[in-house]
Structure formats: C-alpha cells, structure tokens
Image (cartoon, rainbow, N blue to C red; front, side):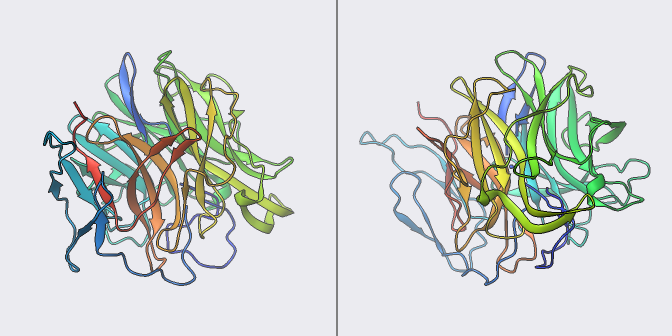
Length: 413
C-alpha cells in the first residue's frame, strides 16, 4: 500500500501518506519455493453494472449468463481443434471474492491457492483479532474465507498492517509485511517486518525484528527466489527525496535464514513521469513538495531468461493508479522500462484503480494470472480480481475485466 492508504473507503480529501498494491509466479528453489515476486481509488461516477456475458477463451464468442447468476465456477469443455480434442476451462467473473481485499498476494501451496491481503478496519469479515485477510481456493475462482492470517505482535495490536507476501523456504512459510508505530499511529512510521508459520493457513507469528532498522518509511515487501542461482531477494518501496520526489522501489539480497538483509537496498524503478504523480502540493517531512510521485508494489517474475518487475504507480484512490513493468538481466538490475505508462494494467469505465498485483501460475500450471485489486462501483472497498497475462514482444499485458472470462485447467498436450 502507499502512504495515505486507509483500510476504510476512499475520500476525496488529501491524505497524509499514500498506499499501494501486485499475484506471483511460482518459483521453486533447491530448498523450497514461493509464489510471488512480487492502493486504487473510488469512482466519481459509479460505472455501469457488469455485463451478463463473458467470452469464450479461444473464439472470443460471447457466452450467455443468467442475469441473476451469482457466477460460481462453471466447467466448460470447448473443442480446440478439428480432431475434437477437448480441454477443460474454468469460467470466472470479477471480483472473484466480494469482501475487502486490498494488495492481494496469492501463493500456490500443495493443492490450494492462498490469498493474503490488506484488510479493512470496517470490513464485514471477522479476522478473529488477527491481521490480514486469508482466503483459500482450489481453482483461483471460488474462494473460502479462513479468517485472519497474522497474530498481532506485542504493541502492534491496533497498528495499521499493509501488503503481506508469503514465501516458502526450509519447510516454513515466511510472511513479509509492514506495520506502523501503534503509539504514534502515523503512516510515516510504517516499517518492514517478517513473521513465520508452519503451514500456509498460519497463524503467522511475528519474528520480533525490523528488517531495515536503519531505513525510514518502508512498505510493500516482496520476496523473490532467483531460479538460476537459488538466492533470495527482497523487493520493497521507500522514499527518495531527490529529482522526481516520492516513493520508489528498491531491492536487497536476503539471507537463507529469510530474516537477515545482506546489503542496503538499491533502486529498481524510481519516478520519472507525470503518470506516477500521487499528489501535488503535498506536505511531508516538514516540507511542502510541489509534486509527490508514487511507485510501489514491486513484484518480480522470471520468464525466458529475463526478470520482469511489475510495479504500481499513481494515486491508489483514483483512476490514475495502474501497473507498469521493468525488465532486467539480473534480480539487482540494471532495470529498464520498455514501455512508459501503465502498460501492463490500466483502468477503464468498469474497472476503477486496478493495481498492486501479484502473479501466479493458473490451474494449468503454465498460464500466468495477474491477481490485483480494483474498487467496487460504490467506491467503498477494493476487491480481489484476476485476469490472464498476455506476453507480448513489449512485455506483459492484462485486459482488466468485470465480465470475466475463462482460465485453462490443463496444459495443451
């Protein structure tokens, strides 16, 4: 999330800090694995209700749906060639879960997908005194609410907790997240922490340490295991007060113990253009900044010898929020942005403020699925959405939907 992020519905008043959002690709290391590697604004005018059709995965032909259909998953068996060979597909419609679910991260562990997300203080789902929404699904479409994921650390019972991501290493599940100072209650005191559990369902227990004790404001941690070296890295967002002032993304190498940062963070993607503006004439750090930018929610996927860093930018409260990407030959860079702007994921009349995504492999084990949040029509909550990623010569592209589509359940033979 960004500074100014609230777990409540957005307002149009200026906020003291900002927030961010990104699902993850499944990467297995020699000793373990992870999915990951790696908020949105309310509409001025409510968009129209979702259409009652979705489209066939291959032909693009509309598929009729009943107007009042709650649209639980439906298995479709379209023919895929002239021989009559059939493949199973799973239909879906966004949002795939109707509760508050910001900054969603999805981990595939065993036979299930697990979603961890920033919760709302006024959400309808009881977290049982814990932090972070925890969901489970067998197919990315039908989700069950499991309660809260993280036991509160001492002194942080009422602190704001943002943007969790989870990695599997050494038979343990490691949750990275940020929380602010419970006493001060100031977003600028957000710092990165780590918790651990024996199972993906948790409960996660805080390890009692700050990951970057010498850094100031730090949010949006995203652990990544390099499949080429087996080494771990932790991506994050922090403030930069020179040139294009604002929040930018960075990375540090992470030790095998999953708790020790091996070197200070180095920049990944920093602000460079107007589409990344969070707010103008913003007072922060005791100074009035003419323009404050935000780049956050870094999430890395390795594909075909390249490292792709998804990142969210703009103002999470409105339509400026979207997702771009950078590419590098190594987890530490150097990073280049092949296409300026929200080239990966951009909102439209129906999808408001999509962002803070993660990436995970779909049920077929090969299709990359973008997991992100977007505002509901009333602008009262960020909700869980999924859509397939199309890999183009210029990088990943996602067409955000409310009507949805279908996901392949098995890889073509």
